[in-house]
Length: 498
Image (cartoon, rainbow, N blue to C red; front, side, top):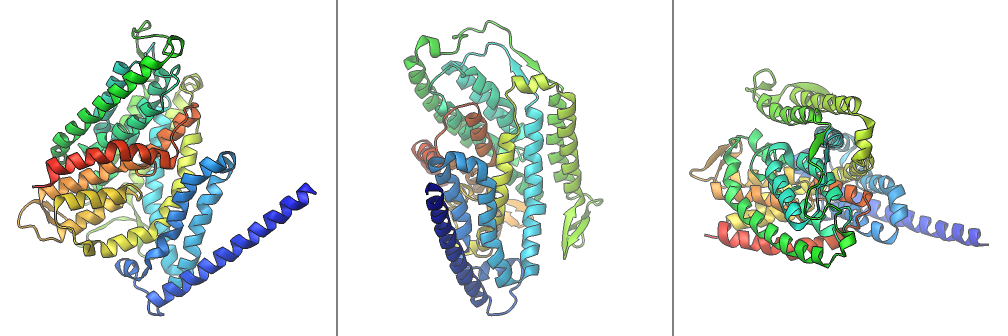
């Protein structure tokens, strides 16, 4: 009888879901056709003008799924998160294909998956695989001073090996150092704030948005101008962290603190150090991709188009991108083959976190197609003119969208303002203070949510895999509202309001 009731309830829910989906699809199709004037819409810029604002509903639905399901049905979510990701992707893609044509839909899908998602996930996979083979040994005590030092080192390192590289390199030593402490979620939260985000602001290698700026003419070391802003944020956040961590550490029972206490009994050593070579190859491949994008062997100066392999319609996969991905995959495979399994076991390494990130972010990339298209087409209508406006607009959207294309949209908007002098870029001259505001907004405010920057989600997954109870999606946003938003207000008053 119980099975019959269960099946009956399942059938009712299933039919209701189908009815809801059908209703949404029908409305979406009619709205799309109406918006495009009943004919075939133009691709690219015109697409953003034709799409209705509520076409971002599947993207919002996926975000809510990430936020709610782990709270109410955690076990179910772990098993079916990829299905949920695909469900929301199809809920966007099917009506989009009906309303705008299969060719346009396929073109957008290929571009977002092949040109954006694939390089993104390959880079994350390479850094995850390589860093998982590096083990920091020794009695590293999880005291407030040691935690403070590790956060500082990770933050300074992030600009040179990337926020993802620094996060993957240091998150496991940080977790092991604090393994015997009861309250440690705050350590991971501040790790995400500093190492996974803010630390990457000083060079184009540090974070993808700055790399896009570099490709469009911003000098490689120009972003070092963000150093005063970073220094202020580091000092404030580390002081707050130290006070909090010291207070919680004192409340710990002696037996729940790190066994090493405040002294290091066993000297620190690095096992699997040969993986540092593979890490350098990955970072070097990113830099190489930037420099080859303007080299005559990879770039047609007359048309402004990169040479590459034709994929579909006018879409090509650039040779420099292929070279970058090939080097990363090679480095990752060599790391897996040459690193002893015992080292990865000692590091508590599994492929779970990168698998979760890959499954969720494919849905995020697909469902954010309309959001990015609308932003790209109508971004100039926002009426932005002052540095503080660019800082908050770029940051607010970077908290939920991919911060790289968001940065590019506002960089293009800033270039259209017609600055008499400033940084000469491919999109026009940009006033230095506005470019600093855009850069800081994209990099710093990626820390506002778990999905604001890819390392955030991966660090959380690794922490939970090591049985650290992390804040929920909304719970983490509570932390950012308490500690980051007031900090960004201070940044605004000091640096962006004349």
